[in-house]
Image (cartoon, rainbow, N blue to C red; front, side, top):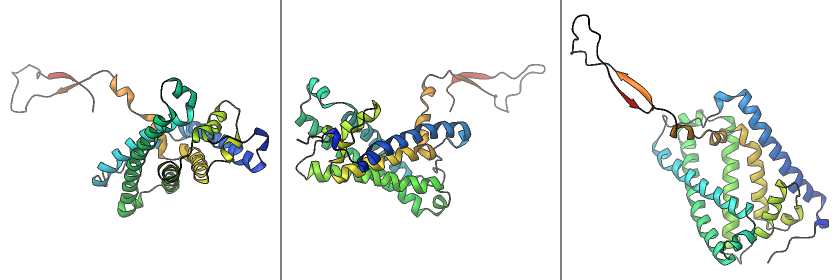
Length: 257
């Protein structure tokens, strides 16, 4: 069991890395989205390159997004939900650990495979490479580094290693940030890979509003409840209406494409 250090043992570098930097990144995350929405709504898009290349995209995009959704769900449970809550729900530590390791491994492999395909098509296709935005040159390496550090930390400590319960250290620090009671000493003693993963994740959140990642807030959920749009098509040109009569139109309710 890993017990966090006492609160008074937090050093100056710990306060800088695990209190100042996360709060600065969160402030940039919020303010950056406001600025982007007010000044660059036309750029609020994923800037798809499907028309330029679709074979790699057909496999890479679903793999990456499916893996990303699973990884995010796993992080929400692992970081935001206290260990006492899962135990109260009847999920023991061994069951949680086993499920988290194997589900996280599957999600990580899918995400890495998808991200690798997306990066490869951007590097190998000249047309896509020439159209790469400057923000993409920051986003893709930072995202890849964050994902690889997370997978490496899990593999090194919880798959092939003796095991590390991050819910007693990293999770305590993470939850403390949002209740304005940070515990830098809780994460300062964590293994280097976990600390590096947490730090790159903070930087990724700071870069988020200035990259294509903003498109996640524009999911077309409203399409599911939008009203039908009526399209009218003209009759065939060979069918001539009687003199003085107007052409009859066939109409039917259809959902807009």
